[in-house]
Length: 204
Image (cartoon, rainbow, N blue to C red):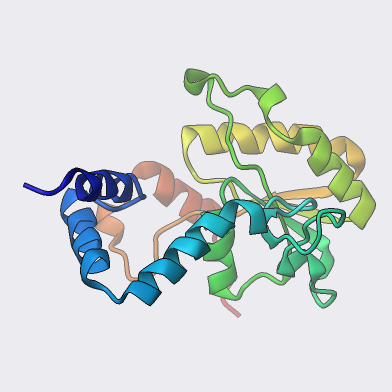
């Protein structure tokens, strides 16, 4: 039904996370009929991403490349008002963003970019353990907060990290998991309820 170039665009857009064929088609039709200046600018912005954005050399989050000779540093690592003594380890950049939106953490981060997953061929040697240990040492970190997801892979990763970090004399903690706010206890699974009880707090 569509010309080959438009079909190719739809297929490319459909590969984006959370975008199905219908949404990709809607995006493509919008771009075809949008103002030429807007489409050209959008294309230039997308094309420039690979050269202007790099992982932060300290935490792995996204950073703007300022010069070829300067290691990329993200806005969080560059913020001197952040607490250097607390380091939150996350599996993905999306997890970092979720924690930042909560406003509950003012320390710094370390992004693993992957979790232990034997089925996917990801073992301990594939995780940036040396970089994490170096970051803990260089920043004088006193507490490492493991914020990996409450999945089999996330739990295995947290256990490995705790084992690797404890010899450095740093406190290692794990984020609590429990019944979500506004959730119904009746529909919570056994593991979630168990963790909610274990992580209970006194009401003062």
